[in-house]
Amino acid sequence: MSIAPEDRAYWVALVQFRSFGAVRMERLMRHFPTMKRAFEASAGELVEAGIEPKIASHFLGERIHIDPEALMRELEIHGVQAVTLKDDIYPPLLKEIYDPPAVLFVRGALPDPARRHLAVVGSRKASDYGTRVTQDLVKPLAQAGVVVVSGLAYGIDAIAHDTALAADGTTLAVLGSGVDEQSIYPSANRALASRILSQGGALISEFPLGTLPLKSHFPFRNRIIAGLCHGTLVVEAALKSGSLITARCALESGREVYAVPGSIYSQTSEGPHNLIKLGATPASCAQDIFGLEAVPQPVENAYQPRGEEETLVWERLGSMPIHLDELIRATQMPAQKTTSVLTLMEIKGAVRHHGGNFFARA
Image (cartoon, rainbow, N blue to C red; front, side, top):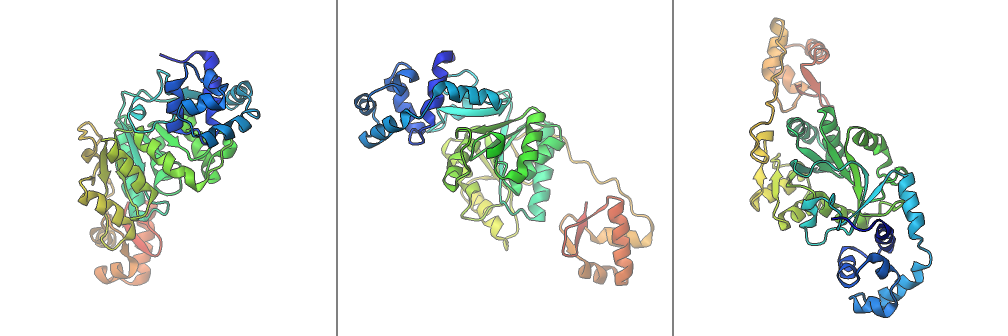
């Protein structure tokens, strides 16, 4: 089932009026036979449909500035399709949430809804630990065909998108702004957005073209991230975090929530740890998510130390970063020699420098 082509322009026109969000659009859908009829309705008819008198009056004042056909031409110019709740291609999982967007603006291709979708969210200031965990969990999941969904923000979001792309996977970015090039936020991630599109993913928003990324938009964005997915993975998040809004939306929709444990001394571990206390599934490897058994196993580092000095350093390194001073004490090697050996091992791809003179196995 899809709407009549001539009616689509009026769906797009109605959501240009920001007071017509998901709930009021639902009222219009129930009351009017078409959205063209809703767009052309009198104030009294809108009130009969459940729209508050002040909002109905405001809409009539704004309506004269909205040109449905011009809006459709603009979508075509930007390569964006307007997907309505009545369309067959509207994501079925998203339809199940309390207030699904009446219109989704989609730039790119929506993947097969039969594929598993996983939201991956977390802190905008990802730690080295959070970065590595995201990469280690997302890569095998993307290789196994899981669609990775996130918000294109700095930190965990961008790392999740980038890791999925590097694994030749599919990833979707849900924005708190318009999906046109000039509206993508943050602007520093526009190149990442381009890669998402070029590898068969999509940019998605309920906000019309040209919409600025206002702070108030992001809680609405987060419900779409959760709503598109079978489960949500929270990597790092403080107790007051947008990532926890996403997790709460997932829980309210009966979806799986996974949380990565972290250090008890880290503020960005407080969110995941609280979710685990509330019943979220702890995730320490890709196999913990969706109970997938066909997830590729991580490949062990093939590096083998050469010589006594490399062996001394290698045996004292692990997955958690260790400070250079502690490594010098543990190996009892001179500082200059330890630094030299670490540099050589880093060139070989065996060691990763995490900044601040902290090192770990790569």
